Amino acid sequence: MRQPKLLDYLLLVLLALIWASAFFNIKIATYSFGPVTIALLRVFFGAIPVLLLCYYNKIKIEAFSKDWHWFAMIGFINLVAPFFLIAYGIKSVQSNLAAILMSTTPLSSTVLGHFYTKNEKFNFIKTFGILIGFSGIIYLFSDNLLIDENNFLSALLILLGSTCYVVGGVLTLKISKKKNENVTGSILIWAIIILIPLASLTEQPWNVEPSLESTISVIYLGLVSTGIAWLLRFRILVNNGLIFQSQVSYLIPIFGTILSYIFLKELITIKVLISLIAVCVGVYFVRKADNKKLLK
Image (cartoon, rainbow, N blue to C red):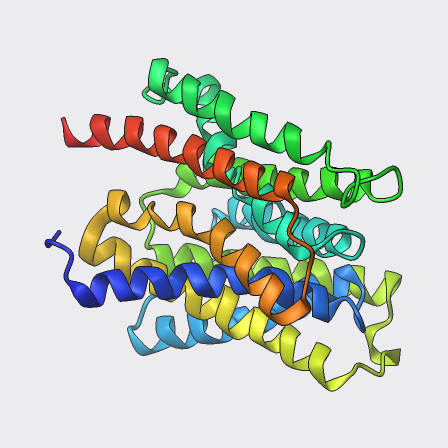
């Protein structure tokens, strides 16, 4: 690993912007497409740059090897389920709320890691961070201007989507010795295989007459927010390590809230700002505890 340079910080900010921009683009995509179709198109277009890189670098894709069941399971839990749940939820809530709700992933992974791994146990700093972060989410649900009885379930489904990412991450540890590009390419292939019949049976996407803006958004979600973002994440991890890359967690909800206001003029209430600060502070303390452990 090398000491971060200006370019590395710029790439980190770019990665945060790309991932944060996914939320308002999902909202725009829902104007024309159903959530299953959005998930399918996202993994289809996302697979293109990843598989091209694997082909260029002669990285073997093991989607149909003896470990196919792991790739299929992770593809469903880490891609199919969260992409569907987030798209379904964003239909009824503001995309800036989705950005804040999804930013709880580091907090959820810490809780799950305590119970399912040997070296990720709670300590005082982690517990403090988790309590602050989830208190912010609970407070966000009290914002009756943005979350009411009509979209309460949608907000919960987005939270469930963030939990799917965490569970998928734990399962990925089962094949952690394989190359990141191979794993990503393989789970994208299985996600496509799973989603094609689901989209065909439930939404018949061939009957859709999408608007231009929804079409651009769904292609962007696949090529940029999924495919290119994962490749950028690989580069940052290889060059600067996990500690540096994990700082993206603080930036995503902030950029997501700003971008949703710029492009969709979404309402930002005082409770949204307080919840955003609480989640970022919570993630900061959790990451601080993890960083101390990694530096020992």
